[in-house]
Length: 415
Image (cartoon, rainbow, N blue to C red):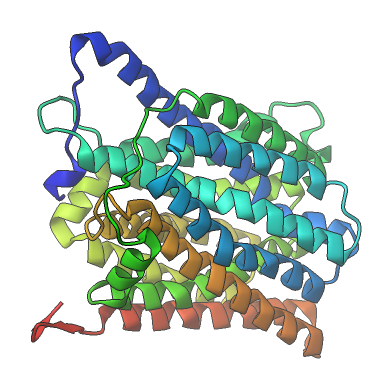
């Protein structure tokens, strides 16, 4: 692994306790924030379906998450790079996320559901991406003197653990099978508020105001040049497929007669595979490199989706969840680390959030919009619609691998 990704701080004796508290708060914020995400992500399409929305309407409503991701991440990243420390900004975003989750439980029609989803993802997506860029900033800017080293995955693993925690704990509740998707959203809102309170104890960081270049402009310049250009294009295509997958997969599980809480448990099988891989990320990267890890993440998409399309059964669903681990490690952990190596302190948040704008914004607008058009005009049965959607998503993964592995030239050499 790059030395910058494995450095650590050991503060002076009089500062050691506050620093330790701040780093404990960082892990706790990851855990509780992703617990809220785990209570939202697998069930959001089911919440909309329970309100009477058809599949095409659900796809349109979910597309609003992409619209918000076109605007909000870069706006808040600029604030983080120039004006407010993440210790102040993250609690505000997490509070907004909690309020939006509560509003979502009160919506009844397509229009107000779409508006609330816009507000929800306008706070959720920037808060999670900023948490990553904030952690990467701590990792890169620490002096090399202290032991043990701080690494990105050391704190990011708490997010994965938090994601699976709610479903694992709920099985001990009486009548846990009777919990509805809306009930889980209310619990998720409570988790977001707890994360906002913990975020007030995060380590302090000072925005970098000495660079006259606007952070977003500097980030766009870096993204447009090799070697980042191919990665950004690949992530856009893969993001279109994944945005559609997260819409149709809960419906697919519902058609296979899984209950709402069981859907959460199934999702957690995939998260468990990423947790098992997480301690070995440093060894993987040292052996094959960050770029290869990203390509493996993209390649896991078609392998998983083609298998589901060909063999739609409960057993295959459980087995293919193992492929969720390489996907997350490659696309959501190795890729931000790769971007970290190509950013300086003046536009670190903006580069990470530009990636979010591309993979969550553009992709989540186009992917669900295409899916909505297909669902509204298709004469296939619902089971066939879902299978064909999986094949299309798998093809997006293949195209992402091609774009990511295509040679790019910089100064006459392969990048």
